[in-house]
Image (tube, rainbow, N blue to C red; front, side, top):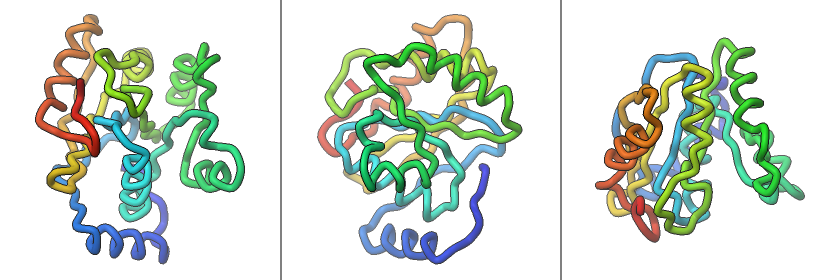
Length: 185
C-alpha cells in the first residue's frame, strides 16, 4: 500500500479508533496499483470513518467524491487527504481520466463508492469496474460493517470480460456486511 510519512495525526486517529471500538479485519494486498471500492455506503459517517482509518494507517489512497463536498474549508481538507472532486451531472470522461492517471503512475490506489450514493440502490454504478478493467488493475473490496464496528478488507478481485457476472460476484462478497442504515441492496 502506498504510504504517507508518520506524523502526530496518525497517532491521534489510531487512538480515536481504539476509543470508539473500531477495528480493521483482513490484510492489505501487496500491489502498487488498484481500485478500492467501499460499500455499503449508507451514511456520511462512512466517509468520516474511512478518512480516520486512512490517516491512522498512513494510507496514500486517492478517492473520488461528489464535487459539492469540495466547496469551502472542507474542500481544502478533502483535497489535502487525496480527494478528487467529480461533477456527477457531467461525469463524462471520468473513466478515461482515471485510466490515464493509472497509466502515468507507478503507484496509485484509487478509492470509490460503487453505489454512488448513500441511498439503497439495486444496481451499482459501473465506473469503478470500467476503470479497473481498462487500466488492467485489480479491484480491492472493502466493507463497512457497523454491527461489528469493523472495516473488512476483502480479497483482490480481477475483472473478466463479463461485467454483469463480476458485479454479481462482488455484490455477493458484500452480502454479510451491514452499513449504518442498510446493507448492499
